[in-house]
Image (tube, rainbow, N blue to C red):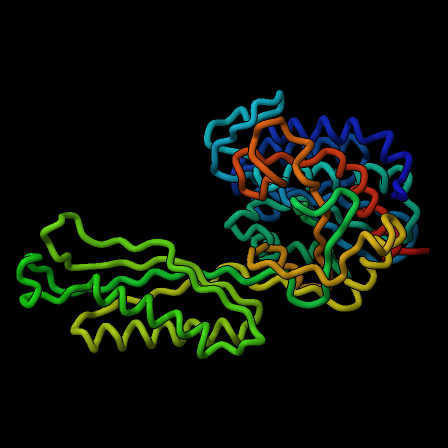
Length: 396
């Protein structure tokens, strides 16, 4: 790997920051301590700081030369509401909170890049280092945009990166076009008529209506969505009843829908609503159908993706860059930034899990896992990528 020597020498300090953040996880829009660490480090390195975008967001402004050109590099800061089971020294000190997605590492990598760009960077223009809150369900990217991120920090393009367990250390994955799916939720409340379980003919059973709806919904994916498109409809909760001898008045269906294209999402929502309403009507029940669109699909732009591939090729070699990485049905709110600006999002391999304590899970330890830990060997690699990308984009 063609790493920047000065970043490698600085990596011990980056690691200390990463592990400190890991030990003190904060949930979405509560990242006050983390934001203070980021802002204080940037100030220590004489990087001007903008605070308050997205409530707890932090932006560092690194300028060199005279060019009016600018680029944005983004990392997320928030943790997850889950209990960590690791026992190493930097394990979470806050019960029920854990950095199980590597945002501690993302923040540390971007801080390492910011330090190098401020002290040794060779570029002409402005690099905005964006430390975003509330990626885990809080739409912090959109909140920063709404608060004026791209107005106060006018940039031509914006780039993001996420660690990916199971991909070898020193390897990257990226693709042009859709790379992560949209995330959407539904709640369907079916109201029937309660009755004694021994006298079902005197009631309207919402449980049977719910069963019919769930079964019929699956035909949307198999018979309405084109086989060349991707869609996932998962009913993850069914709530009904409180006694074995009572037919309840209501049944509730809750779950998620994920697609890569807006047209497919429109089709899914419309057909789900039609099936729920018509089935309920046919069986004598009523229905309240609610569908909430959360994160849009993350779509990489062609020109910026090609640029990222060129940069990665120079760092790790083209054989370690999967330019057709399999898209994931997981979601990421960096999608909002890519709807507002051109850019690209890449996966950086987090290894196969050997960096973790022995006995904590098998295999690579997937994201959102109670024994997950960010691989510190990525820190100089990720920081090097950020620096080379910014310097390439703003070449003199």
